[in-house]
Amino acid sequence: MAKLSVAAFSSVSGSLVAGQPTESLVLDFASGAVETAVLDVSNVRFVRLCADAPCLYETGVSPTVSAASRYLPANTVEVFRLDPGNRIRVAAAAE
Image (cartoon, rainbow, N blue to C red; front, side):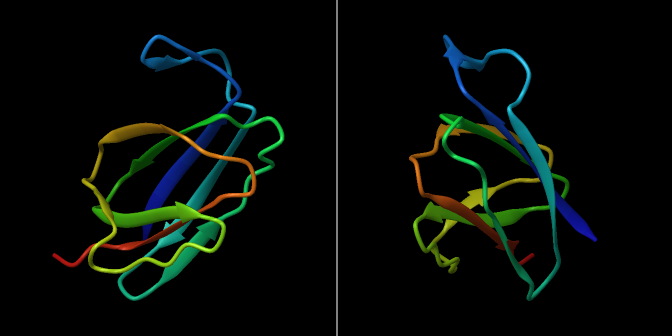
């Protein structure tokens, strides 16, 4: 089963997240399955994503994944700011 690793950080140094993650979790996703990550965003400012299979993801208060969503190739790291109250939703990308 495909997995998305999510690591949350409270600070960033330059273009790198700094220190140990304040929270980490792994989402399992497969073709047709959609998973949502809910993080304790009171300490989260930045999120690092890495998936072992291509996926699509969205962020927001109530995100919906579609064919137009952000694409994350397999084994690629992406870091971005996550606003308080937002969630991450992921689904397998069509191959």
